[in-house]
Length: 147
Figure (spheres, rainbow, N blue to C red):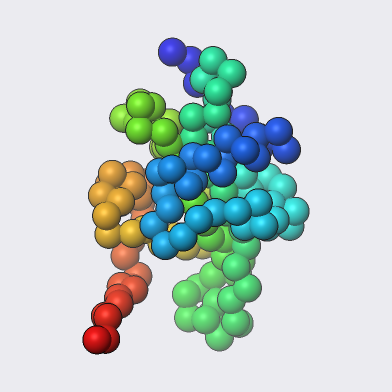
């Protein structure tokens, strides 16, 4: 099985949305409108293709961070990984790592020096990948239901 990591093409939209909504719909569905951020950072989305089929993707955008926060973080330009999805049949083959590495390279080439991402607690495989790729926990997002 060969997998190519390549730039997103408009004709990938349906496949990307299917993957997102089938395997990463933690807080809601992903729509074509959610992918509109691609227009601001076209290199911020890449796909993994195997035998003509999109089997994974990663996308991100730049985050508008106040100057005071940038100073506190020692950062100048911040990117954010919005979503990384690999079809379950293609996991544990290095595809997620390759997608994330490609996205991080694109951020770096565009001048980012700090990258953020959120990882749902149930996404333990993703958390393991992010740990291996050098991400650190900076906060906990918590919720409580009031009845």
